[in-house]
Length: 436
Image (cartoon, rainbow, N blue to C red; front, side, top):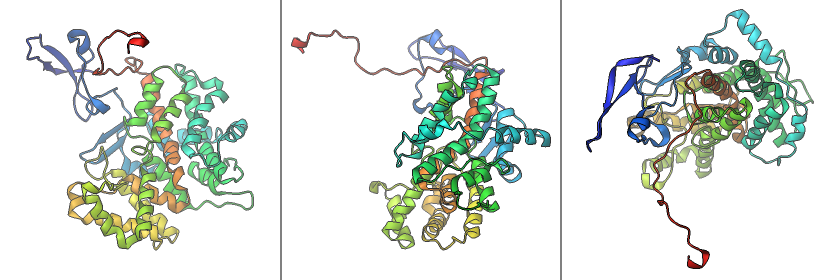
């Protein structure tokens, strides 16, 4: 980072001395004011709940321009990556900074494919969970437990350990998610098959049974691969920041990623597409397509407390670029599976139509987001709603790892320690019990 010639001057109205603050310019995006010496020189902290105006790190991985509706992985637009690359190519890009050559791609795919099996003891670990446990509860436990099985890759400060942990996590996450699903439905676990693609292998582990041979549908395979690409990273969101903060203590990579999984579980983050499908189910119970207008009127009425899930985005003030790509995939999948007339999907398309045409939603830029379409696609494929967030975690694992590795390699990184504005009781004396 090189400071700009321009400096920000902080002055105080109480006569305290002013101070100059360095200004840094990124490749793109807002300038950043460096406040690291603020407390040392003034004895004051800044106050920024949710860190909405605070850059916690410098990064070369992902850039978002919410006003333009732009998402770049290592400088490449998501629209180009989703059309021209597969998920493992995207993983390579996020991890190493450049798209792979054909030789690098083949080598990386071999390394991932040869690590897809998990220790057999993981099956017995699963049996400690109730059959009706939420998949994210299971996944949080399984990912955290990986450090107990793979002792040779738990030193976060060792580059070789981080490398093998990255490959293991990317390779084994589909196996763990599929195992969690099979456990909840009481079916036998299906072992990975090395001659299938990353997405094809996951589909087979999810939906095959020992009774008959499973054939991967290429349209569904590509749709799932696109879901993975679109969710691979998203800058400094809540779960990524959690992984960085957790990893800053020096904990092992598996524990840091498990922390990300736990954070992603929240309905305001990774659980958004699950919440969206639950909303569609509620409208269906109200009366389906015939009740969409009535539901939308309730959404417009702020006193009703009814929320429209799967529309709008905290970061994108324009159309979510991932949503446009996922919309295409959504219609491809529904056509392939002959589900255009399925009541729930007809309901979703009616919601989409209103949101794109109704002045209330257009003016507020409440466009359908990626969660809206990916939830519909996953349900069409046959993935149960409670598993949606686990699919998200699977896809986001590579982004978490890339961000974690970047932080560890940053000479300026320190253990995270946010400050606070304390508004509780000042120091006071403890009275004896008889006087309270």
